[in-house]
Length: 465
Image (tube, rainbow, N blue to C red; front, side, top):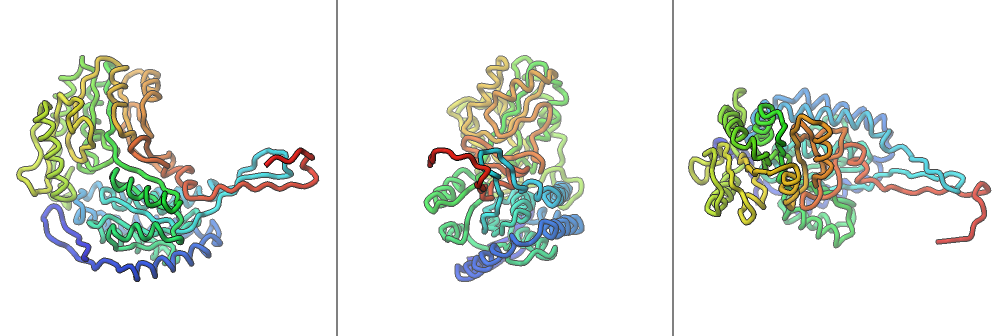
């Protein structure tokens, strides 16, 4: 089997890589397991030195890596450079804070001394998606490596060059080679890896289906998992919102990564009194965005990552329109089998339509009208997803009150949903479980060990197990 790198803008095959056999994969796993016994004995100072070096290399190779993303999955180079910079910032963040996050936590008990110790689990398998081919990996790898874990990356099959470039970053920074390896494998070997006792945990960012399959396999083998899955993020525009700013930000939030982001705003829940002017302004902002070759500095959004993704999105819209939805802005594919998908707006979306229930992973804005705040919250929560959400209002207290009632892993008031190394990232409901980023993300793959030291200071008590 070959793993292909295909330019979605031109349709041209860039490179082909032979997929690793199980015997080769198993050899790499054996080396990783050995590294997991020695890597935790390195000092935090040494790990931090190497991680800062990785951040430096990311910045030094910023243009090269942005070009690679443009070629492999259609991300405009301006967005690619921003993604690489975010990776560098995150590497530096964990280099500076990992020791603090893993410091023994003293707990007052009847013991002479008692505390929680944070210790690495070992080999962590990361199954990662194509939409942010560097960021998705670094937000796992930086905390995992700083914590003393070892990483194996099974990246999406359409970004193999990005996957190998990431491996090169960590190796060139000086990390022992076996502490981070890219596995060019098909999905059929993932189950075998999870079943292997040398793999201690799995993290996956991807679809609901992929998440459920990985979780089922990991559960059967008693392995820790973190899942970051799909989202259909609501963007609530209350009656008192700054309409101009909300509409402008709505266009940006829908078009993150050409609409291919789990935390891109997808469902725009707007108070009925401002519905028509909001749609009008959103349409204006979307039409003003420029598309073209992702390598062109002027391009603001590129093609979807694969033609089949555009085909599927087209089908979702067409099925919804047949069920009663109304097209407010015509765009979409020029013809089936092409990856370019221009922005669309659809309204009249109701239960029973695909657009109401499913994630639309591309530049289609769904408009829902709300009678009042309670109705907006009801519509926002009437989804099997719960990743991010945004609330727009001139009243900060009102915004916070609404935010507390939304079923989501993150809610942003008067701001676009985003991720940052300082704050935890993850979802609820079908958007997954566990957290990435912040101290919580680092601790997901640690043994939170209770240590109890008794002795004369411990008063005599009746033994209770």
